[in-house]
Every structure is written in C-alpha cells, then in structure tokens.
Image 1 (tube, rainbow, N blue to C red):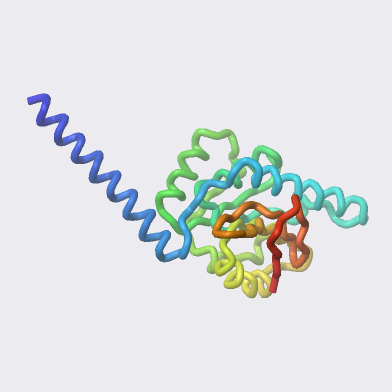
Image 2: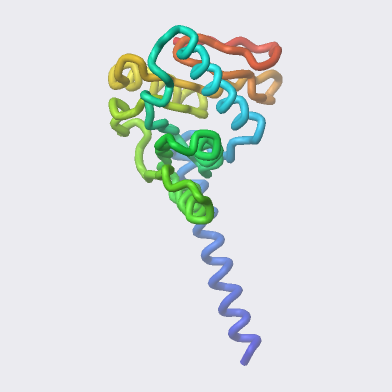
Length: 199
C-alpha cells in the first residue's frame, strides 16, 4: 500500500513539474525570451545608477528623485531586482510588472518572505501598464522588447520621469552586462567591445 501512495505522489509531483515547465516554455516562446533572475552585479549597477541620479538632481537643484516614484520594473521576471531596490529604497513604492505566471508566482512568494511592504508584483502586459503613473521605469529587456516599449514610454511618461534600461552587449554569441542606459544617454560601467545604439 505505501508503494502505491508513493507512486501517486510521485506522479502528481511530476505532472506539476511538467505543467510548470510547459508554462515557462510557452510564455518564453510568446515573449521571445525566457525569464532570468537579475544577477547581483546588475542589481548593484541599477542601485548605483539610481544613487547617481539622486546626487545629480541634488547638485542641479532639481527636485529629489523620491518625488518621481513609484519605481516600475517593466518585466520583473523573478522579482530579484525589485526586491533589491526595495532594500536600497525602503520608503519608495516599487511595482513589478510580469506576464509569465511562474516567475510572477515566485515573485509573490519571495515578497511574502521579505519585509518589503512597499513592493507590489502585478501580473499583466508590460505594454499595457499605465506608465503615466510611474516616476521611474526600470527595464531589463531584450532589444526587441525595448524597441516596442520605447514609443509607449515616450508617449505616456510625464516630464521628469526617468527610464533606466540595463543594456547588454553581445560578442560572439555571448552577452554580458555592458552598462546602464538612462533616457537616451549610455553610461558605461566597464569597457566593452560592442556598441549600444538607442533609437
């Protein structure tokens, strides 16, 4: 009898695992890219850029960056970048938008285990999000998605809103973090052999 219970539980587990894999593969195919967690160096680069923008605004006598929140992460994936931002900026509202079910569920579970009440993960289409409500938009997307998102951000963002895009430069089939793009300006975080062109 215990062997049959074990067999049934194993079958249920394998079926659930298969459904998870199918859901991720299907959404990856629809999106054109699979969801990947943001690496620690990229998370740190975004936080460093946010702090640089904050200092630059203070030096220019402009309004502080805190007045242009919430921070919206377009394509939040597994939620690692949004949670890192929440740790660095505990008083700012952060919204992660993700359309893939499994990474979104993972983000929500991670949020339950964290102490960041200012973070919200929404399941939805990042191209349909009301960006006019955003003060800062952070994107870690592939070039095709950025080309599609670019006109939406230009149309919907309010004056003074910021866009931070994590750019990747590939060479010989490999891709590595190249730097941070804010607005239409490229800020290099290290030397690369590639070139970033924003349109």
